[in-house]
Image (cartoon, rainbow, N blue to C red; front, top):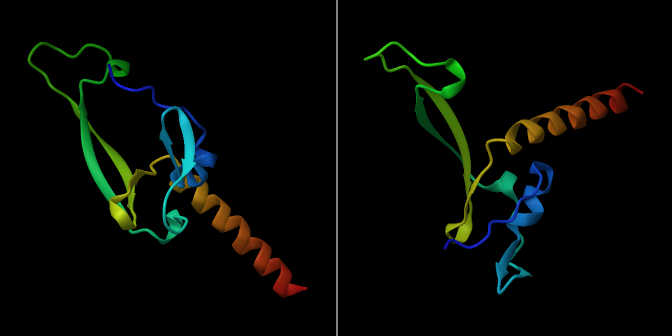
Length: 106
């Protein structure tokens, strides 16, 4: 049986990247802390054929839709899927840029 996979929110992804779970205990990952924004961004496209939300297609018809997944590859072979984290990161950067623009106007 596969080990249990912990569930956590997208916002806490950067914190979870820096920990590993051994013997049901969270421990800090060896080496320097990982900053996801510094890791190269990679993209992979998968296809979902005949998604259930689109209903049952006619016999013999196959409909496939692309699903784009985003990943960050960090040092030491660490690969993290960041598909849901990237929009949050971009929104936070936009807020920060807006604050900086307002601060420079004053």
